[in-house]
Length: 288
Image (cartoon, rainbow, N blue to C red; front, top):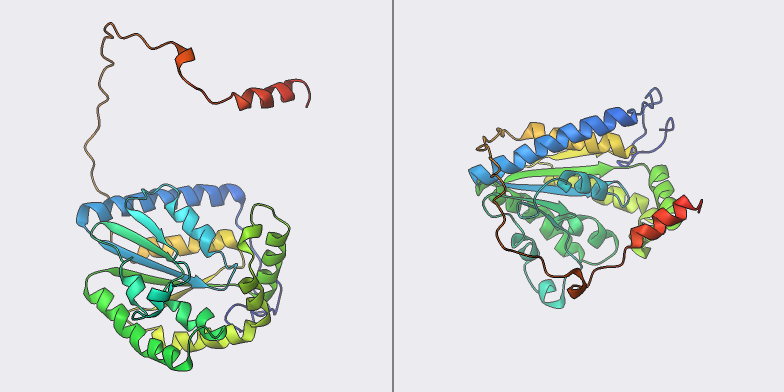
């Protein structure tokens, strides 16, 4: 991390901050440990009927998607699901703003990860002119009430803001531009976030003033280093929820039964996929 650069909150980093990166083996081991705990959280959620909502917000290319991917890697999609809503339809534009998000809230025994959320109105919609100033002000008044209703219903709500510096964001955009596997992540809207950095900073500051409440606080994740951000965020989430390990009955595998007169149909009666792997092995053996 460069000295004295501007971070995602618009403030200057301390000049004496040391750039220390976690070793790869330590990162992999700790990530696996945390993922094991996430499985325990999932099983506790199922067993107790708890409902968990985790909101991921922040700058474009701040590392939200990568963190969500690591969280859900070993979880059941029947329990933990991602809500990444597209642009609203014409009908949804005529609804109460929060209405389209309510149907994605968890039922008993579910975890929902919002990859961006109702806070679109406080950020991209405001900056890009997709909502009116009146709609934005109404959102800022209603949002704390809406979230208090969620909490009063018994839903566990956690909100994370991923903060990335302008230099690091631009570096990641350039990396995406040259990567055929991630080029789809780079859109014209992302480029606008570079040109409108200060506007997004002001919008974020205003959002925090109104929605960083004692009942529903924001937790800021410094994400110039993606690996550090993932571990820090996941560890915080786990530590913030009072879950217990659920005892599972030991599963005894049955002995394989003695086969009777069953004979497998001839292989030629089925259509198999081509053995593509053999072409790779052949090329390798031939020095290709």
